[in-house]
Image (cartoon, rainbow, N blue to C red; front, side, top):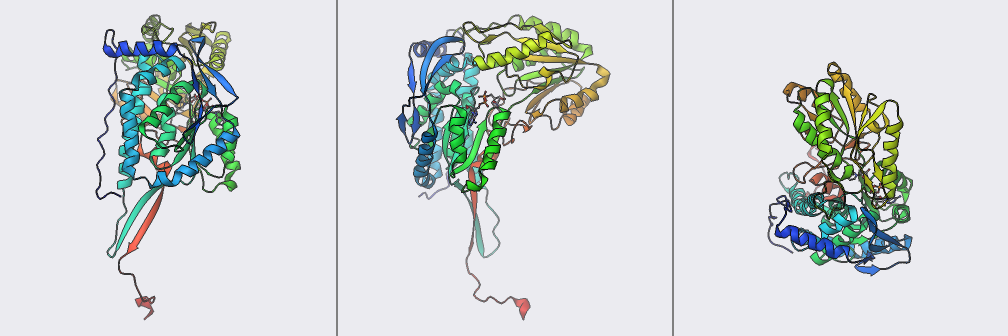
Length: 541
Ligand code: NAD
């Protein structure tokens, strides 16, 4: 019980450590990378706070050196899912009765642990396990996740503060209850921050969760589970079950206590899950909340007035950082003929300077793609471009998986605005350029709007303000996160709430109160001070 309305600490974005040569933080991170690369750990299933080791295991390797084993990961099965649902139920009452400021405290503490003593471990496990360079890991695993935890606490406060009007003689109130049942949080490999946010956003709002991490992110995700334990998250509030998707998914979707799906991953998987929930709809105790952020085919559209230097930098960073494995990665370019020559020359000259390799060598801007399946899929697109009559590879195109899964930054040019690599999500370091006639701006804007099923991120480049207004209007529904004179990646919590429409997802904007509203259920309370004692209305007289 509390007898005060508490303020929460004003959230601020976690500062990005640049890890410049010779700094103490660089030395500490390098030492942690070396230490972690020298050990092999066991990653258990964690249910109700108990570690479980199963027969079914998988080796977790470095994508940039796939002979190097980092961990053995134990897989869960249907029994584990049912046990986790039970653990959620057992934890639910006490967790929901815990005053909100105590729930908030746990996540604020988790953010401080992450930004402080755990920073190197979480960054090193992301760098080694997911093949991210120090900067890409820092902005994701350290900063964005600390931001999610701190900003979400403030959004929760905002939600709780929203109260209805009260007419004379009564007091109307609204409270936000945790959901009855568990949220199934199914998370992708590419962002450590998203992985931890998906189970913890519901938990903050008083809803228990089963977290199914991606196998290829299991190392960093496991350490985050341990961090949450250290922060004081009670057993059973979040249960951690690595494993094969359908093996975990099928029993979770069949469970009557499923209260929500919090998913980030590919569009096909999300559509399958929505179907599974639809098929089970009569079996649930409540209608499950469905939040899914999925794929993208993100564009950069330049106007003739674009600043070419800025366009080149945005393309290079937007397309190739983290090997293009961001849902927001720039993967199709629309460039007007009048600046195409200069743009292409400058872009190719800059790409020629990119170094690729092991993230422990800090001079590498790019590292490996996540696994063999991704490597084969991406190299398939490269081969398609190589053999097509209406496309040409301008640079890159070399794929080598002998020691690690390396794919050179690749630029494809095509005269066909509906060429396969202009339309489908590749999720790798491949960007396709379509040069358009300056006089065909509107026609090309329409092609950009309709070429792909996705609508996640997109950027326009124009110095001419009227052109920018016109392009922004024409592309109104083409992206949920829209950028003017900036790359389409790098959304920051609290600044650019993230999510897309159309096939890209439900656009519930991770890192905003819109998302948190999905993990609670409002109860309206009307209290009447002096209730009527005569049922007859005056008009009856
Ligand atoms: P994925 O769809 O292959 O896997 C996502 C998760 O779903 C994994 O944990 C996987 O094991 C699990 N899964 C697969 N089938 C399942 C099933 N039947 N039941 C339960 N779980 C199942 O995606 P990925 O390769 O990890 O991530 C890349 C994708 O994620 C890309 O399409 C990318 O655009 C998207 N993404 C989107 C956003 C966004 O905010 N829109 C952010 C990051 C990634």
